[in-house]
Image (cartoon, rainbow, N blue to C red):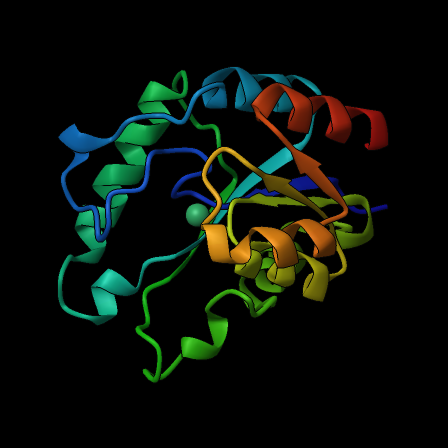
Length: 179
Ligand SMILES: [Mg+2]
């Protein structure tokens, strides 16, 4: 049997979204994120980041800057390694490889096949409609974390998600009940 995983969006899910963030000193955790990832790890869930970072493809930031931000995030979350893998799509819309961008399930599917993860026993957590779509397209249960959802996506994302969580403790409780 494959491993169970929680796929996690990064911006406005784990850290506060700063558009095209390349400066690790500006990384700030979302409320409850550190306790949430530590609890999920204690329960032996494999944690994987799934994030569109089109700022690279747009020439605004480098991959090295994205990795520096990720490292700072892991440090603030309590020290690593916390994530088994990072799925980043660096393409801007229209670029080669942009078919990996969420709402595509490709980044989730690639991580699952590399790490022997059972997608039907796994979860995707995010704050955007495209996060919920990518998780659903991959065959995961999906959690809309409602800390920071764009107003024009809230209704569709809430309807599509398996569960809508008002905050991180609610999301973790639900996952641990279903896992
Ligand atoms: Mg996000």
